Length: 458
Image 1 (cartoon, one colour):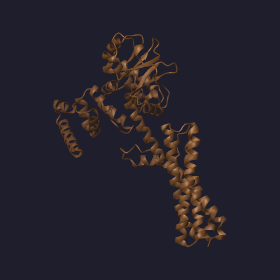
Image 2: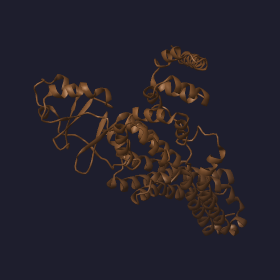
Image 3: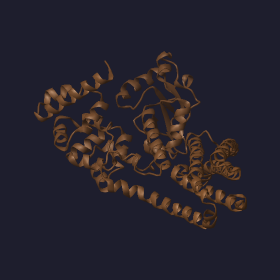
């Protein structure tokens, strides 16, 4: 089936389901709807208006609704509205049926009073598990881990471990890896489901488990967790406290969400935005409110650039043709600075640049700036000479290009590395910020050289 045919089929199915909702045909709707993949159910839910969502709540159980809500991707502030549409008991039961980490993600978007209300109504066991995760700081391993995992003891047999696996598997997040603990619940090993299946039933777990188990601290930053799981190709990663007690696990689906979240966050900062993920919102005032702080900062930096040009008014009055090359030099400096910035931020974000690699990066970018600046400077010198018939002017513009590209490349790499050293997110050294800083540098270099060699210009 072609992609266009699949889209048509999906559209037809959605129309049929909406009609069944409107006609209140419960059995027919449930038969069709519950055969869909949870992701498709979530997409269908997001397209419904408020009246149809009310009808949907009447036709589904909290457990069925939990599968859908785990797939819903809406702006953070909308979760509060969606939950308020449901009967409080229904909403609490739904949250209790969700994976603990997903339920915590939703509750983190609500007011403390609402969270307390849902936890009071909720099943006590589920509420206790959620409360445990709510204590952890956001964006840490503890905030994205799940407590729905299976742990077995090192001093038991494979037979008894398989019995535990069969009994607890329905409520576990994953069973492909089973983590092994001692009597004090310290993490001591890991064993795969495959190794459990092929091992002799009377073999002790301690004899077949791997003791080389990689874990993360409960306070570890989620970005570092994502990097570890990417590097080791793990499906699950255990989370421990400072005494190596096993607290929970982080599964690959949660890490994919983290990677998407971190990439969007870095992209928004590189663009000087804070609303890049808010595409579902149609409120221009909210978007403007989030973008204005950066724009105001850049406005003042731009005024500094204009003021700097004003200081060289005498030079411009004597050699007016210098003005036509200002956008060229400023634009080239901004472009090369942003390129170096992207390389540095990516290296820091992926963990490829460690402390000893920062100096190498700066040296490499400096040499890159020298090479690109040299070739660009020679090319501009020849072009300006042929165009204006003035070799001195061509040399001035060429040397300015050479100097600004070299300095801008070093600046673009240095600023994020410096911010990272100060424990500041390097992505805040955004493209617009670097571009404006390099405008200042390029103007200073260009007009400084022009003033120095003004007597040689025509």
